[in-house]
Length: 70
Image 1 (tube, rainbow, N blue to C red):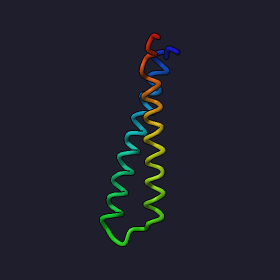
Image 2: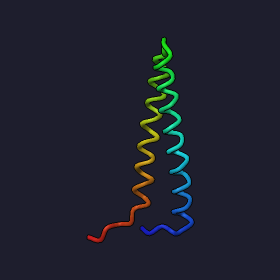
Image 3: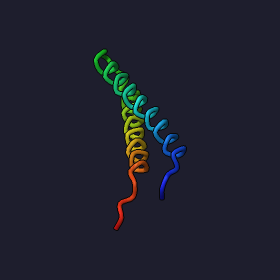
């Protein structure tokens, strides 16, 4: 499947948003851990969300890579 320029642009925009969210989650997690006592439940939830965001980033990046001919 080949993406149109518009579709690729939309995916790149969403990818950028997810990268920013991933970076922000990382900063929040670091801050919570550095300032004891951390809320362990909140840290676990944030880490889970961070992993979900990372998975979505990988999926979108894969969509931007052109199909390789067999």
